[in-house]
Image (cartoon, rainbow over all chains, first blue to last red; front, side, top):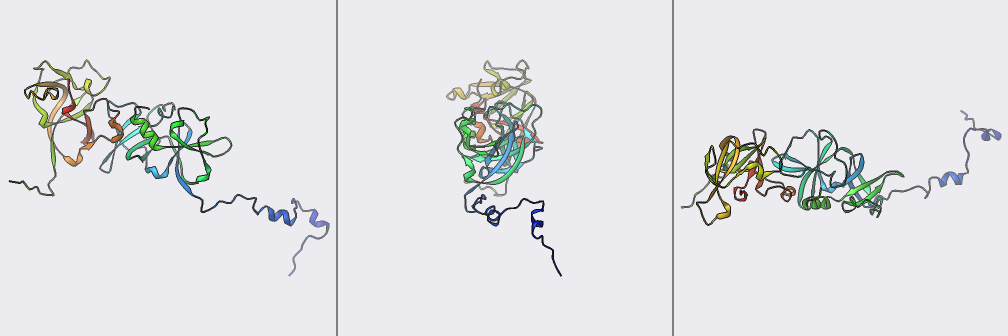
Length: 186
Length: 135
């Protein structure tokens, strides 16, 4: 049994870019980004409001609920309060974050999904428009919010995750959101 | 003599249920002294004006519930009347189906009298604290 190997000038005629052994090995070396498996990570629930990307810490999101959950309207509360949910023998409030985050309220009947969020001893449903993902993110990927962040968002954003050159995602602080809501904002 | 309660016995709360505009609401029956078709005291208030802004404030209540006036606690005979509408019923509801208002909403409610909710036939009922209602 024999195998044919290119010889002499034949090798140079191959339609591949050639490199030295050193170059070939270097491409697999230290130059590649290696994910440190011991690096602390944080679970995030990624979602969108008004097309903008946001996240909440996974530790604060107790449940993700479908949008067809019955919502009971309560009079005498701000428009950012959609009403209450009856979940397995418990009553939970349901709020929208649009006003608090300075976003235009969506038109038409509310849709999307509901996140059941718990923070600072308070539990409440939060309406989101689209659930993107639930993922683990290395802590080092989360950067402090820049000073250029809008004044409306500043109090509620604990970190920024630069997804690519064009897109960043704001990690929201659920305690700050609930606190502001209780103080009459949003 | 001490009274012993069967641990399996379901605690009940007697409530007077009525309508406030398009919403159903309830007061603990203990605080409702009487019901009349027209006001018989000088101190009256329409329930909807005490609970929320907006709505049809010109709509006349069809019934008046006589309540003890919490502002004049020293005078037990002082009463006022709450204007309500719709069918008025007295119901015993299981205590474990009466839920306090979610914590997040407590500081945002128009009236502190709104203290909880319950569901009756898949319909939300606003639970009102009669001691915090006043004309």
